[in-house]
Amino acid sequence: MSKLLIVEDSDITRNELKIIAIESGLFDQVLTASNGEEGIKQVIKGEPDACILDLEMPRMGGFTFLKWVMKNKPIPVIIFSSLYSDENIFKALELGAIDFLGKNENYITGNFKEKVIDKLKILKHSRPGKMKVSNPDESVPEEKKEKSIHSKYKLIVLGASTGGPTAIQKILKDIDGKISVPIIVCQHMPKNFTPLFAERLNKMILNYTVKEAKDGDLIENNAIFICPGESHTIVNGKKLNIVPSKKSDLYSPSINMALETSATSYRENIIGIILTGMGKDGIMGAKKVKELGGMILVQSLDSCVIGGMPGEIIKNNLYDLIVPIENLGEKIVEICNEK
Image 1 (tube, rainbow, N blue to C red):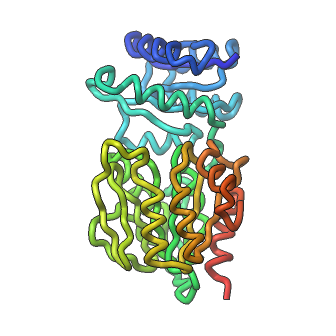
Image 2: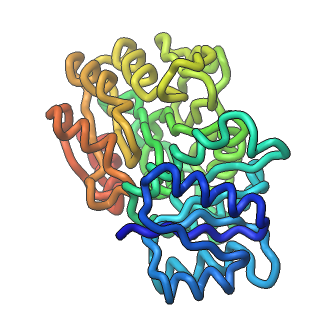
């Protein structure tokens, strides 16, 4: 029997989420709690398989609950919070949450039910995130370095979805100061999240400049471009073009579009990397990269929060190497520094 726990202080919101979860048929039982203390009791007593968690609650807030769960009973957790555009979302992801859904004043109207069901599907097929990423305040400044100027590879494209932010942070921290190859990061996320993600990474990464990609940006060494949400990033030679996504697009920003256009421009000089995430985005891009002589790395399935995207690449034999997330940064450095 699969069980979902909803930890939310608003009676109306908690009941609405419970109804949606029951009607979805994705979980056999739905447990509820109005704060972190009750949530811990439900975890001990009910042993849920997944959790939807608010961050701001009386008595015990979401962060304290999340820390306790990840230490004592790790389960997949999705944040459902009004702190949607706040750095707190990143902190929750780094503590082990796998994804988030933002509240707003009209969140129970419109396509709210559809969005919740999408997140429930992710919870159903995920494992908890356990990747520890250093806080930017813990970073020890290092002297700027210039590496891999003469590397065969002239561009790296990282594609990720659920569980991607912490995986990406881990990789970028591990390669920082060891290579200078430009990087495009294509992470499925909303448009008001990508600028914050870029800002946070820029505080963590010392030897690269990290920014949200803008139309007309030039691709240069020591630059990391975060593809903006609700649009697609196109590589046109050494330049980036940003085009709006359509409502009919399954994935935004599209990993396929970033990889396919990068492969056309960089051919055998590109490394494409498919990380954790649900769905099939990246297959067509990986195929194009392989056709034109580039390299494809995939995150090992056992180190993914959800192995859908890497699994599709593996199933279709479109990869060169399968690497655990713990070693992926090291492997990228090794490949880029090969003589």
